[in-house]
Amino acid sequence: MLATGKDLRSEAWAALGTVIDPELDEPITDLGFVRTLTVHGDDVEVHLRLPTAFCAPNFAYLMCSDAQQALRGLPGVGAVAVLLDDHHDSDKINTGLAAMAGYRGTFGSEAEDDLDQLRLTFRRKAYIAALERACRWALRQLAQQPEELFELVLGDLEEGPVKAGLLRRRADLGLPTDRGAPLLLDEFGQITPREEVAMRLRFARTVRVSVDGNAHFCRGLLRTRYPGSSADQEPRRETGEC
Image (cartoon, rainbow, N blue to C red):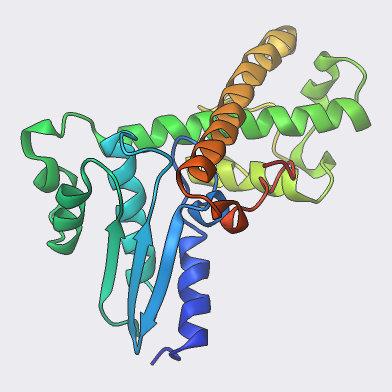
């Protein structure tokens, strides 16, 4: 049986740290989206919050469902309650989660999106942004021209948060993560031709700026909506920026 009290709370917090906001590509624990985490014996109750009351319901449900699944996966855990606070669909989402109704069971005819496809789309965007961060590092340390990146493999990258972030996002997409794998693989696993490297990097930069900008904006909205929540936020792991 899993230890209770502080040990279970630590395990639960670590589990929540694996839940990634699909659009912002950061753990919900770093973003400050975990409002409270309470342990009662072997039972866990979590209240989540979002920057606005009108954040997209499909994103909100995906985050809450992933949190519920992560907590239910803890060995020996008892009842798990995940509740979304202060959202225009809080009642609907919380009722669906409690009943284990799934996305379509929760939203019925309103559930027009395929959550698996939505998740895949944002994982691809997250990978493009992570690849751009790695390429920027490589251009500072290993190469003088973008075309020179064509020769690099993952083993050429320095160990650290930028490389770790790239490897995690590659693994999410089922892309190779071995040391000899080419650095310049696109989100579909195709090698970027040498003559297209510069253009591809420009595209990747727009994606990375969009992801990072949205995350920065949402962090600010959360701090405005919930005074004091800045204490619950951590800098982005790859950049150290809030």
